[in-house]
Image 1 (cartoon, rainbow, N blue to C red):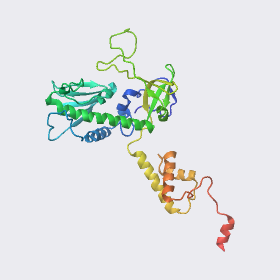
Image 2 (image 1 turned 45 degrees about the vertical axis):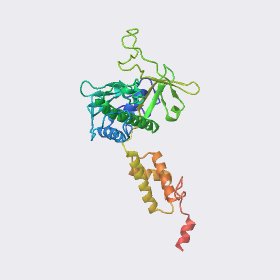
Image 3 (image 1 turned 180 degrees about the vertical axis):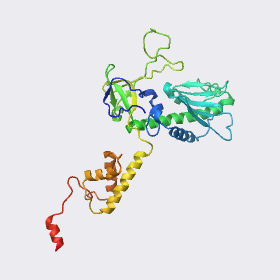
Image 4 (image 1 turned 90 degrees about the horizontal axis):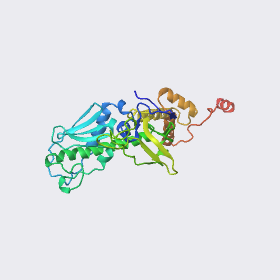
Amino acid sequence: MVDKVADARLAFDPGPSWVPLSRAPFFFGWQGGAHLSDVSRSVIERQISQAIKAADGPPSPYSTSAPPPEVEWRLEIEDRTISVFNAKLQFYLRPYYGEVGIFPTRRGGPAYVGTPEEFLNKEFLNKETGNDVPWNDVSEEWQHGVEWHWRRGKLILNSLASTFSSNIQLGRAHIMARHEILGPFERVHYDQWQYLTLDDPPPLPPDGSGVWFDPRLRADWWTDRNPLSTATGPSGERLYSIYVAPGESTPLESSASIEEKCLRLLQKIGRDFPEHCPMTVDQLRAKVKNEIPELTKTAFNACLFRFRGQAKRTDWIRRGRPEKPSKKTVSKNKI
């Protein structure tokens, strides 16, 4: 299990499962919001399969080779690498390095390695266009295979980015940053993040240059991008060393099923007491939570709001002490 920081206010060192923001979608971009180390293989397979199946658009007008009659692909997850194989090529994700690439499964094919941003900003054009892009020297033999991986690779990366944004918004992952270079980490909430702008990261010095005992990050052989991000606010606020940490991960569909159980239970109580609920809101919440221990107060209030709207009875339940029948009313009914 990864460490949890859902209730942490301050931290002086990044946790063992914290990830630099530039690599965070690889780790927190999966449905359900769990850290990659806790994500099941079935979740990864389902999300990647959905992205691959969505790539049904027409082929590139620059592709001169005919596609094969049937497209078969396979997924492998091993050695911290997620790979999709097809047409003697593989598209792979290496989360711990922030790296994506297309490589041949045998010698002699085209190869590309880079960051997700670089991959997403490239276009598939063959050598006849004269553009300086990764695919400009792809021979006709490999054009269809490269295009197949390029299209689906972009959709996979976009799926991770979109799900990552949702997980941040839902609190399943937390943005953590230093407000001062030598200050502690603090959580940056989703609404606060909307006012901040990411700065362009300075390039890293190449490995082997500079002062040899200076313990700063060095560029990888395939990129000089600095994985540590900074951001600036509208009034000059600064954030340094932006990371993403685990929040409150929720199993797939569990929160929806919990609320549905709550709503069904409220509907049953409403049928038993159609005119007026004999309990206060707090008593009703306690009764429902006894049946559904994992139900949160926020989820209960949302379900109660939905139920009252469906029943069109805003006065069905009251707050405070339950109403007691008056003695006068009781004696009158006995006559």
